[in-house]
Structures are given as C-alpha cells and as structure tokens.
Image (tube, rainbow, N blue to C red; front, side, top):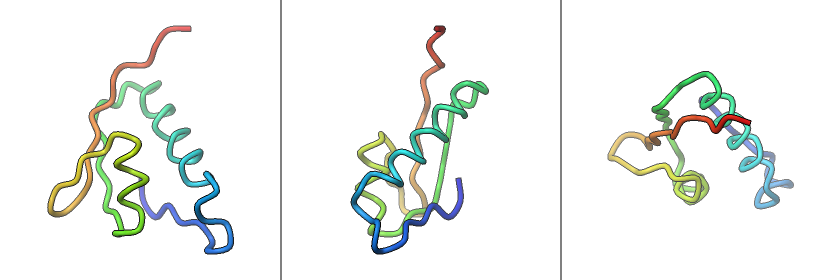
Length: 69
C-alpha cells in the first residue's frame, strides 16, 4: 500500500481505516501473508490499531489466511 491520504477536513472520521481494512481483506483473499508500508507519525496509531508493528523504517503486518464463507 502506498500513499493512503485523507483530506484534512475528513480526518479522524474512519475513511482511512475503512479503505485500509478493505485493502487488507483483498490481500488476504489473494493469499498475501505479509504487508509492509511506510508511515507518517500521524498515521502510526491507525496502522498500529490494525495490527501493524513499527520498525525503524516501516510498519509490517502478518496476515492470517482468509476465512472461508
């Protein structure tokens, strides 16, 4: 994922969380098991809340397999 950005007038309303969650769901459905991204200081709490773990240069997330419906 690259350049998730929310207009300042619409920040803190759930738009970025909804978008990133949809992207993660699509990645899981395709069998992707590891995601990494760069993050601004402002976005780190969002990504941490989604399970990403900070490292000095990026944030990473290991995805669990998609659940069969």
